[in-house]
Amino acid sequence: MTRSTHQLVEMGLMVSLASVLSQIALVHWPQGGSVTLGASIPIWAVARRYGTSSGVLAGVSLGIVNLLFGGAVIHPLQGALDYPMAFGALGLAGWPISASLGIALSAAVRFACHCIAGLMFFASYAPAGFDPTMYVLLYNGSLVLPDTLIAMWGFHKMSVRIPGLIEAADGVDPRRRTRSSGEDLS
Image (cartoon, rainbow, N blue to C red; front, top):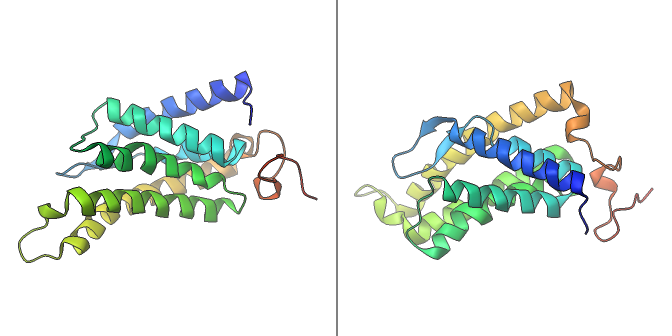
C-alpha cells in the first residue's frame, strides 16, 4: 500500500502525540511499565483511519520512540516483545471489524506480548511462594487493563465529539475494506 504525504505526516504527528502521552504516567510500576494518559488513542485513530498496516507501522514507531526515550532492555528478544511488537499490536485496532472489537483485540495482543516477555525474562521477580506465571499475568494486567480502559474512554469521547478524527480517511468504513484493494465491498 502506498501512503500519501498527508497520511505520513498525520501518522508522524500521531506517533509524536502518543509519545508525549506515554510520558504522562499516572502510575509507574517498580519493575517498569506505567499507566498513561491515553497513549494508545493516537495509534488507534491511525489504525481506524488508514487500516491495520498503517496502524501497526505507527505502533511499531511508537514502540521504538518509547524504547529510545527511557526503555529498559535486558535482552534483544525482550526489547522486541515489550516495545515494537507490543505497541505495534495497537495497530490491530484497524482490523475491519467494529472499533470496540478492534481495540479489544489490540489490547489483548499487547498484553500477550508483555506477558511472553515477562514469562521469559521477569518471572524470577515473583515474590517467594508466588506462582511466577500468576505474578507476570497480574503485573502486566495491572498495567495494560487500566491503561486500555482510560484510552478506551478517551477514544469514545473523541469519536463522539470529533467523529472525523477517527473515521476512515478515505470515507470507506474499515469494516468494508478488502485486504488488498481498499475498495468498498458494498
